Length: 409
Image (cartoon, rainbow, N blue to C red; front, side):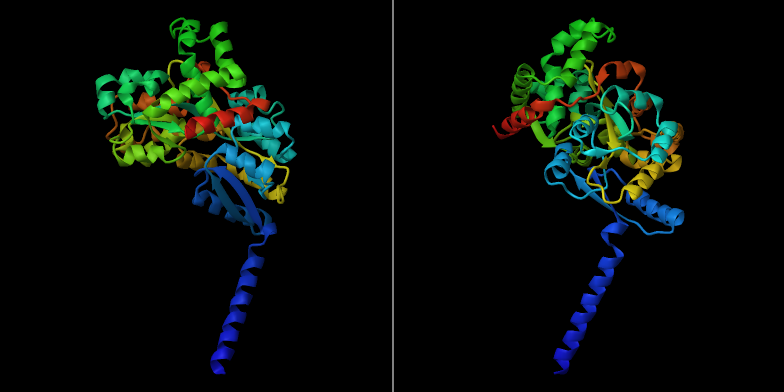
């Protein structure tokens, strides 16, 4: 009998404890944030929770859910109508979600802060493409899409110049050494950059002038047009490449290149934040990586925090965005993510500090500093051959189907 009574007491205590914990972390106290991959550090989340308590006297618990792709993020919001207060999609997906009335504008207070601290050049890019009124997005990180390779690999030692072209990712000489992004829009556009490589070369006068109307028109077409013709071109290019690919990945390739020293795969398609993330880690192997935007052209991407229409805690969401706009916070986020924050003062201070850090630069190769500067803060010359991805409307599903076919065949 005593055993039964004791058991009942334990069960009751556990039930009370569970009830207490549940009430302490109720939905009204929780800010649910959806990101692609590792985009928010635990330190920044903890700092926000403490800052919010001091600012408002109220508690908040941040729950960060990570997905692998932007398309998965879209499905959670559009189809499953999942419960999130903040999301961080890329430019073309912001445009798509805005058109489909899935987003809410920021508060006037948040909007004023954003217009004060965000790099004006990034604001201009956002207005030109996915957020015409600049009222739905906080440019969190920006960067480019290019090729990253290991400078100590035999291929780089023999001919590093090959990596200045997307053609290197279709070279038989690099068979089974290539990392390719399992991301349909990135794959689609890179496939087209390769398919149109001769036309791009001619339009840019053999890569000497990227400002020609012909080059800019073709580059814009590649990143903003969906058509049966272009999908067929991309499909052929990507199908031809498949036998050469070592791995289709989203977030693991950057670590694999460091861990095995390039023995399995020594280069591939990477976002600049992939390169920055591993290089900033500071290991000897990471300092042997090089990143560049190939001569044919590339993508300027901008990942932005947005408030979905299904938001439960809109006030907390605005507060979180305001917190991310603080210079010291944006600085820490840039250091953690390995990409460039949209907060202009933080990006400039970070670059100043890291390039004066002897420990960080120790053990790097000749030309590393110039490479790193260009990777983190792309020059006007690089940005001239980069375009922002646009939403492709009714062709989105066709591209999804095309990519699934390439992977399954």
